[in-house]
Image (cartoon, rainbow, N blue to C red; front, side, top):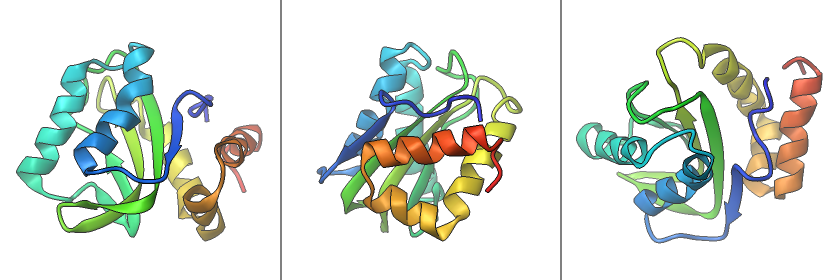
Length: 149
């Protein structure tokens, strides 16, 4: 897992007004690093408004993304954890994982490794309830383990 999460691209906040604001906050580090443009943020919001909450993959977890390439300068991810759940078109979400892909293939390995971390219930709970440093340590440990448990 090629150093996906750093202190800069993980945010933990207690609450927020709506899911659109959550997407904007989650995308902010990627905008600052010029890995994405504002167009990508707008496209994520448009996709949810058009297709509904399909990005909510499990309780409290949404994989936020838009069409590959449009507004994406390089493969990137960021993470926002909100302690109080937010309504995303009828689904409650606390974890917003932003996935920005420059094409339709480059993200597959990284996404598989991140999904492997998230599918472990203990890891998922740690992300929901842990501190930023605990979350960073979790992903860095997976990097050193080569993505294995």
